[in-house]
Image (cartoon, rainbow, N blue to C red; front, side, top):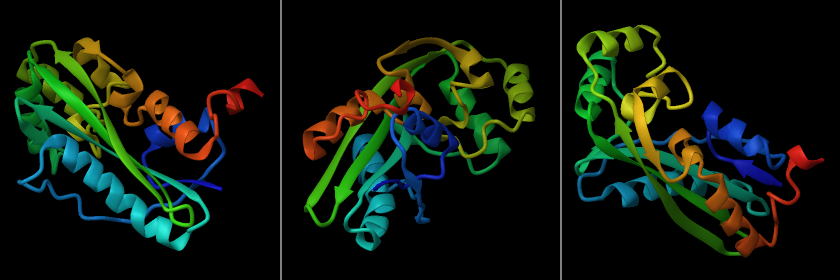
Length: 196
């Protein structure tokens, strides 16, 4: 069995295009540990999400992911409230930021514990206060790293992206699928549900 250790609707939607899985989550404290860089933090949070579930389901492949935004070395997670979301979007306005999704693939019985990350760059247009407030009125920013969803109205803030779009949404499925094939000899792209 394949388990996705995430409650993210975006991750569930992406993965469901390729493989049947069970969705099981384990709550963790998502603190931005000061001593970690953005890549280490994203992978560490993904590992924390996966390890508890993997220990309870040792025969299964467990996938977990966590996304953080890095703007000029400042790690940005999910906003605490509307004001925090406003401040985050002001910081991202008119500049490039990195979107890093750390992910882990675990199988206890095969002693496989693999973590990696994907990185994309996003360039925002200049945002004025009215644009930000209009967006925040939609409450789309809740539970999203960087306080926006690129696949929703937040995509209107984006001037340019580099690298994987699905990574920005929250699951770099192309890279993950290669690791699943290498580690478990399962080709989710070849055997995808969409191709049936």
